[in-house]
Length: 356
Ligand code: NAD
Ligand code: IPM
Ligand code: MN
Image 1: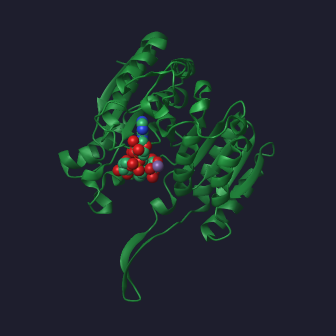
Image 2 (image 1 turned 180 degrees about the vertical axis):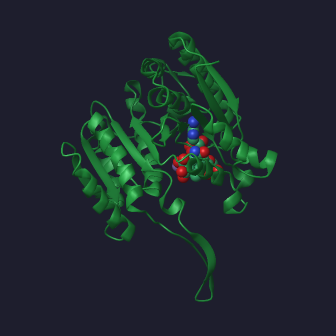
Image 3 (image 1 turned 90 degrees about the vertical axis):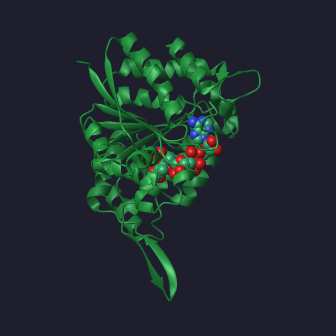
């Protein structure tokens, strides 16, 4: 029997090509650090709709539940954009997050040394390094609140509801405070408490939880200000904790500071061992099949899997070091700079394996 059982959800668009590269790196790391991995594949998203009629077949949930970890590419694409919301590929992604109880999404935004000049933000603003951890609540808020269609004053209308319970806010706040304790002991809670009732409860609850973490310096920002501050002075941030929808938006913004959305990994955790690991980007339909997608966000998600689910810290460090080394000379088009070798998705996967 293998040491670890990993379920692959390759998904749609660039999903299969980036997951294939990440699996190559995973296998190389397993060889090097002396453990074995067994894979199972399952359907999620558009490919699941095509094969079974639904974006999240029961079999997919069952396979994920019996694995040590799940690696996901991305889901969605124009082919499925006109389906009703509850049966779109994205509903499958929300479904698997809900079904596995993955309430905590860690999205580190780190600039790998050689990529500093690929960031659109000036060197002096970035400073020696950028290392922000966004902790995004992942199974609540407007993504999971009541929604509907009806009529308002005789006009067709639609609504979605942002709703958070104290229990939901407390558990994500604890994850963020725990992370801050292991890092720079600074936590920024992001909300829209000047307008939203749910944000006022969010802020009050985070302040309550902070009493258990006297060493962590806590501050609060409104989300609009935070979006601006990320570009004005990213150095001020250590850990950011925020709601599902704000975390979605802010993490895409933070990814560009780090050079490209193709660089940002994520871990979705439940508090137990099982985690789902995925790049923060989508299925990139505009470049799917061209072989030019950046697989590093997915490869770095494997490093997060080693760290947070499989207790293989050395392998995680080794993957991150290999990525940093390759970036000194080789770049996919999204992070290409003059004087570097321009490489394909597959070549990037091979280069990281060699560097390992
Ligand atoms: P996207 O992240 O797929 O793409 C945005 C832009 O970034 C595109 O120009 C794309 O080419 C580029 N990009 C993304 N990943 C890249 C990579 N690895 N290398 C190089 N360039 C990359 O976002 P979108 O276009 O808004 O959404 C496309 C589809 O993906 C939609 O169906 C959306 O719902 C879905 N989506 C899925 C996930 C997920 O599965 N986790 C996340 C976001 C979006
Ligand atoms: C992400 C994506 C998803 C989200 C979509 C595809 C449901 O944008 O993982 O960031 O909004 O959570
Ligand atoms: Mn997103």
